[in-house]
Amino acid sequence: MTFAALQPLADRAAFFVALRQDALTTAVDALGEHRWDADMAAGTLTFTANANPAHQVVTRPHLIATIAPGPRSLLWAWAHPQGDAQGVAAQLRDYGTQYDIAELSRSELAFPEDTGSDLDEWIAQVAHQIGTVAVEITGRSPYYSAPIGGGTRAVFVLDAPLAPLTVQDAVISAPRILSGLALSDARSAVWDAARLAGWNLQWTDEAFSGAIVTDASGSATFRFDEQARIVGIEAPGLTG
Image (cartoon, rainbow, N blue to C red):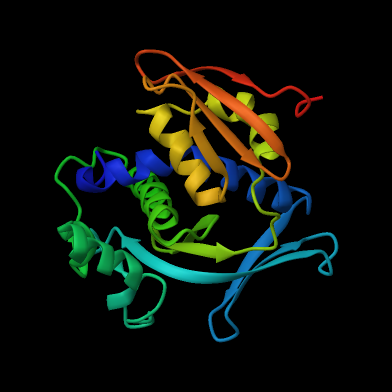
């Protein structure tokens, strides 16, 4: 079990985040075997091809939190000695204060009792949750979960050289993405993807059985069943 109070925010952003993480993975995988390096003084997090160091993906990272097995706690970046009290992570603190979400407005969160036997795996899951929540609140994407030693992970949101997410991109990637993604409420997830991507969205009827999303690349209709699951995507001209 991750931080339960934060899960609704993560659920809402899940579809958009999956699409953006897929775009980051595609860009980094194009380097082949690679490494990552963070230079906080220069304000860069760089992925570099092992075979040719001139081939890089250079991003600007914004530290959101560190998750450490030693103290068994998560420390928000706005309270971190190396963080920025008024940086991007402060948006999560302010959101928590505004909507009375203590897990966002407290500087440090103790791990819950039910972390399970594999603490490394649990920390990795929490890093995903925190990264997704950060995207939801700040609107920045993608995120990166970086192992920084001793089992600790740092979660960043990145300003990365990725093209904005278009409706066409989403239509092409959605079947593959959705096959491995469990959405608790796909209707809300599609609505939120449109909000975060800057698409126009219109519901097809008062029952919210379909959502038409549109941007400069074209238009697509997501169809939902009674349980708010995606049962079809109609996008003539966008997939071929």
